Image 1 (cartoon, rainbow, N blue to C red):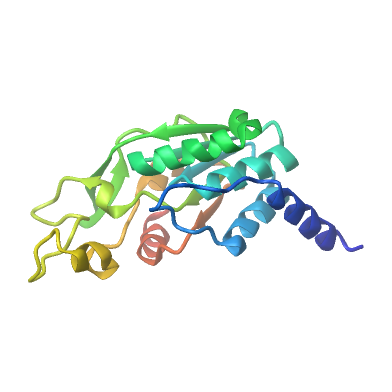
Image 2 (cartoon, rainbow, N blue to C red):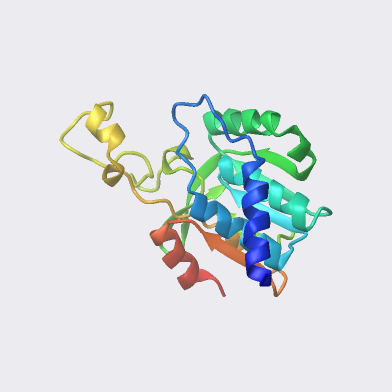
Amino acid sequence: MPEWKSREKLIRQEWDDLDLTSNASYAIPFDPIDIQFLITTIAKKKPTTVLEFGSGFSTIAIAKALQTFCPASHLWSVESNPDWLTHTQDLIKNNQELSEYITLFPTTVSICQIDNQVAHICDSLPNIVPELIYLDGPFGLDVCNNIRGISFSHLATNEPDNSINVKAERGHRRKEVSADILLYESTLRNQCTIIVDGRDCNSMFLKNNLK
């Protein structure tokens, strides 16, 4: 059997062992393709230290991959939303054998300005040198403050801020642009891998600003 077939089979078996049940109504359903990509990357790169922005189902999958492929490794998961923090804590309880691989790192998030570009940064970060970074947070509505009236909360509309349409419509919010990776850049190891999950503005910002 080819190596990639064996690895795919192992990943599928490990995935089936996870308990990803959740009572949180706000939990976004996990994407098996995204999860498998994360696990496959960890199996290939074998990072000793993983940094995740935005916790959830991915936290459990990453921890399982570390347990399977590089058990001396550890995941630091940065979370700014109290509801999501509780959600992830519940998932860890459901998969208690993975808890030793995970450190949840709560923080607040503030708006910032970098070279006349609006972005946001976590107010505290883990003091680590990651070899793999997974960027899937924070959520824009968790970003505090504004710069000259510009914020990451609801944009100006003709509807009241608390209307259902404004709350539900992603287009009425500024897209997230996390700048935290820039602070880590100067001390990252040459083999650090950065995975950005579906954040097109954030990807472009990092491409333009990473040295």
